[in-house]
Length: 281
Image (cartoon, rainbow, N blue to C red):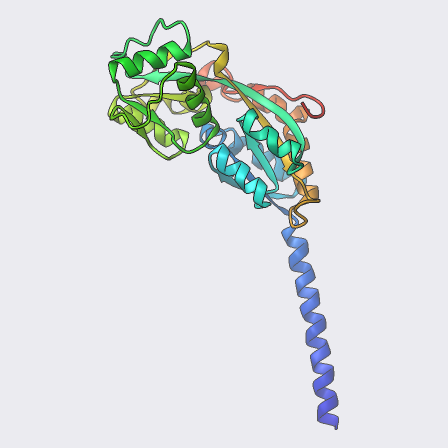
């Protein structure tokens, strides 16, 4: 009987320890925030400045997952991230309307540019619009590298082809990398092709590339970034407090100042322009 009692006591001690350890583990997990973001913000190096600053101020740890906007939004729809930082407003809007994300805020903007070989074999320079530039590339059958990854950049590119009245898929001169912005720029440089890129990533990598900006300035090339929190009511496993803290930080004055200054010393211009606005758009 004594042995039975001792076994029962031991069982309850182990059970108590298990609950305690489990509780500690759960508490530790709440200090990690999963940020699904575009490869353009990641490749530009901006997050290498912003994230350490946020972590130092708050004690949170941010796990950054750089993927195309399409994949980042899909992560949000599955509840696999706490915060999304993306740049495809038309694709973002349905998630806001369905309540998949909350705390939807505009953070910053830059623009897209068309880059290509210095010789500009397609004669893109001097085009009157992005659509005209794309049409010249198609007419000359000059190599064009598409990201082909459902990213915000890819979605913008497809929209321009549509404006030009063209469907480039299937042509030998149109190739998809299926990768992020940095790698696509490298491939375009190696193969002497054209591509559409955000200005920030291009400026960051420019010294390693044999590519020049051959077209810029069309209003359609505006590139707007939003940050949003995955709705904890729909996905209880997400980090509600951490997600809110990261969104608030990115639209706050300190981060906005960093965004406006990033790149000025090295490139003579910011890679992004601070653009935070109060409330939802």
